[in-house]
Length: 238
Image 1 (spheres, rainbow, N blue to C red):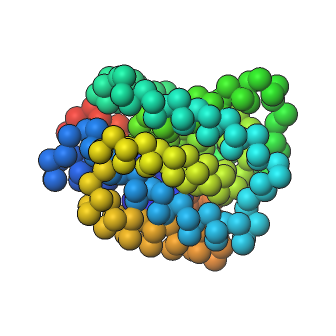
Image 2: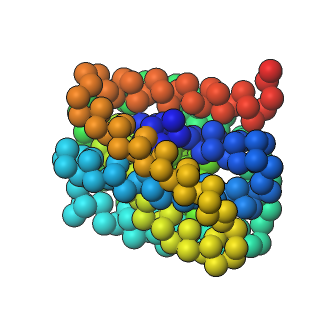
Image 3: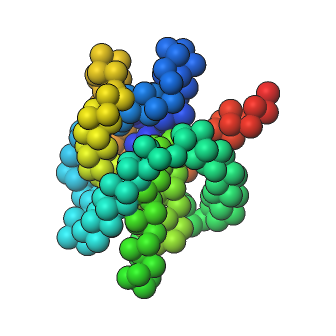
């Protein structure tokens, strides 16, 4: 389920981190590291299928990849300096802001046309770097942040944004997994089991995307649903 949700929208880590910490009793730092194994595994088949479907344009998006990777390296180094709980409290309020942004412009999310806005290179570099920093530090919500930047700020179609999101997350997660392993913050037995499930989800989601009508609508409404669930969970509404 997490692999499927991450591919179409984001916030699948809300499911996996909750299971790791609440069900298995892992401390936040160990759960954070173990969670990355499944994310890396789901990105491989999802990226390959999106590429075959023509949703990726690597020659155009090299700039995105480079700056987000640099940000991720900076972000994972912060794991040793800042508490996970502090960053997750910031995430809670960012989630509210992003939810309002997502609801405010539904037509842009559902547009069938791609009109990429030519932002200043420095602005783009800063956005991609900040995305990488966030993703390197804590994965939860990274997919949502990526989609807001790629769809609302840059004007990409939602499925092309999803493809680029998965590629970037997969690349920097490979680096992040190495760092967490070096620090002894991965439970590999649990992580590999998660990898099998999330790789299956990451295979099914883009495969269905090439066959479903109105897949952009499905992705948008799934994104809204996941954000509602995340807000309810984060703020203990019920």
